[in-house]
Image (cartoon, rainbow, N blue to C red; front, side, top):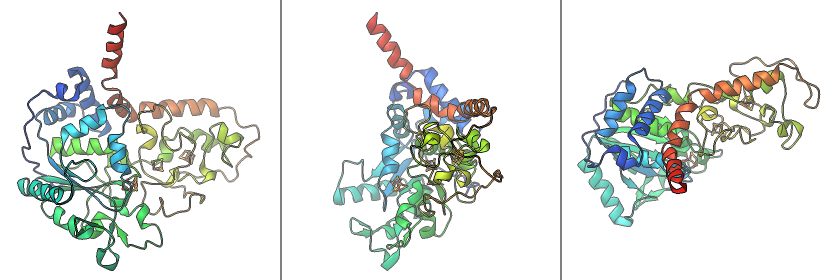
Length: 382
Ligand code: FSX
Ligand code: SF4
Ligand code: F3S
């Protein structure tokens, strides 16, 4: 799939400048392009191509389907505290069908989907949120009287690209949890071919946005792993960039929620953290615009492995993770005992490195426009 060149067409023209559309300055727009290029791991100069692609307003038509899920993927995209993110997403795509967001309902909505597919045949992007029930001939999810399993096949037939957003669409996720009574399946299982996947429950919106920008700029998806996940977001283990990693290495663990170790921010491995076997950029890119430490482990909860097939919603939360790239000490000191001395410096160094990594790009994207707001406040005060 990584080799395929998609023709996303010329889309609809947008008259105003990109800065006006987004409500940000030219400088901030270019900063966003640079940050996205950095997030995608692209070489110097790619930011110019990204800026050109977004400015050309070559907005691809997007058909967004909902099946077995909680709508958390959509919520995480649109409920960012700062409006720039969803503005960017809605600016770079033309969202022609989305059951949660569209004004149309019933037969009108289904007619809008078919007419968008017809008008953009071979050029639209299909985004699927949610798993697809396959048991008993797929009767457990119907939209407008059509079975989900039939709808996804119909919509995928003429799509330029298919993106499975969230763990449900990527590999079954929460609805496929044993005993999986509805036969909840992934998009690629139903279509019988690999698709681009952005797993996570919910996935990080910046990973979706960066993937769409890549499609738009280069006409092809970013480099993917064997599960269809973009490597820029899913090539590293959570454990590699975790701010608690120095505590893991020093053998300092929280043993119970609320114990002394938990209160001091020790490693959550013994509480079942699946960071050592889960690939995602959560610790560097963070969630929810709430600042440093805002991701599951940063908030004190073990990673449940939501981006990883066979881990999230599959392994019990309390089960210890497989250590994929580290050799643990043969024994661990007790959590209440005096620990080594080099560790605090090591923890600080690791936190600094994590903060300066790819997350910087997301920080920048999330802060776009804030300078304006502050300047406005300053002016009002004068
Ligand atoms: Fe929910 Fe999306 Fe989880 Fe699934 O996210 S956040 S259940 S991955 O499909 O809506
Ligand atoms: Fe972080 Fe979890 Fe690894 Fe501990 S086990 S360092 S909390 S990812
Ligand atoms: Fe999911 Fe773990 Fe990230 S639970 S959101 S992969 S920290």
